[in-house]
Length: 359
Image 1: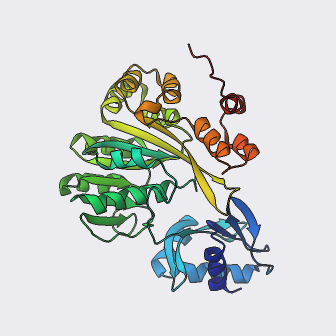
Image 2: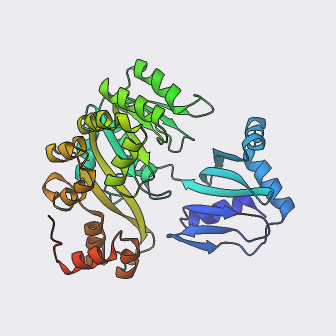
């Protein structure tokens, strides 16, 4: 089993992920679907050798032995950079490798809402959330945002990641990139220090608990612009997730803080294209206007969706509207779009141009 050749196949076929397990053939996610990329079955012995080769350092091997699960970056010379996850399956290693593109692409190249993201890039402080399931393009979009700021503004940018994916070179901005387990012990510990390091922009890989969320809120209140990700499918779920990090007696206080610091939520999902090979993002965009800020304060979070549906003037777009636009442009198959829709009935109405009555 030639691991280098498998990585080359990934890059050539523009696969996003590769999956290696014992007693089966290698597969990769190409244009959103998992496909066989080699007919060679991976034996248990070979799987152990592949895992040991990828783990490399004794430190990684110790972490894997202790936790049975580890994430790290692996570089195959002259082939590419890959985010590796090694886990255990039926007592043997199992590997998922994600191709990390070294070139940071622009908003336009990524088919993202460029005008809105350029506005967010100019924000002096606050909180921006990119949400979506794993593999939906969140990290790629944030890398594009960071590089845009790097090219246009004199800022101090600090990223805290697990692990570091895209690598940046200082242009107009100064960028410090820190990795969990290597440079910092935790997101919370990193944020405590970053607040004292005059960071204009802070990228937190992901927020999973109350303590990290509280530290992020504090950073925004002290004047930093914080960007982070959530594994939620839309803006309403992202806001609800933040509030629910905290005990009920703090919900009113957290909603008040969010109504002030939150700038917006962009939710992404990648769909296979039909006009050419590859995938394209469908996205929901929410901008915190005075009305949405009031709804957050008052705990009327479920009502926010109605204002996203009608908020085109402010740069907002519902996910179903994005899907319909892609279908009408001949970029995405109607049936595929319907599968990705949160509500098939609402998608059908939007496709027909019928407005759903809102109270």
